[in-house]
Image (cartoon, rainbow, N blue to C red; front, top):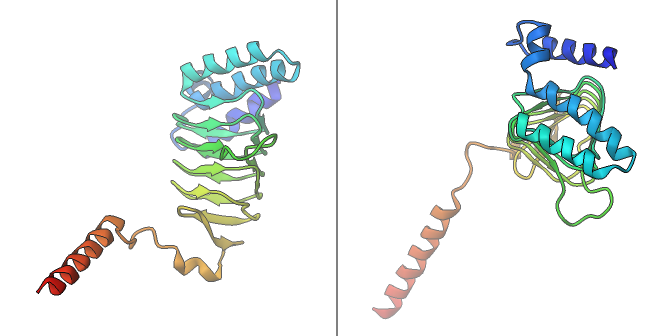
Length: 209
């Protein structure tokens, strides 16, 4: 247990340039507090003491703003940066050496039973506000862009961006449809609808004349 804690603190020191000392990380970082509490909650969950497990989980949620269901499986050296607003579902699984930013959801779609939440591989980065929804795998060494909504499997060594997310890079190389993903020059649906209404009004005016 001490080795796991030491490794986690070292991971925070390596990945967070704002971390000034191991003592600061241990005492003040909500991500570390949340994962430490989850280890206790998960032990009770595995031993069928569900109420106590959920009690620990909810207490941690109030303290840190990070909600991790006791049933979730989390690997070693997970770094949760900032952390506020993170939700990790009951059947979610997270591999080793992952980095998750605030506002991330590892959730379900409401359509599945049993395994409902994603499986995250090793060394995966999930950026701010991303939603990964469903019982599929995100491969090792992948990157999920900020605010992406991922609804299907992500291969290893890939980068996924957009809503819904598309794979734009695999092993550092652009894929064929990467050019289709443009999060800046997007159409405005309201403007398109207003233009359509204007066109219909002009057609009606022409008919009435």
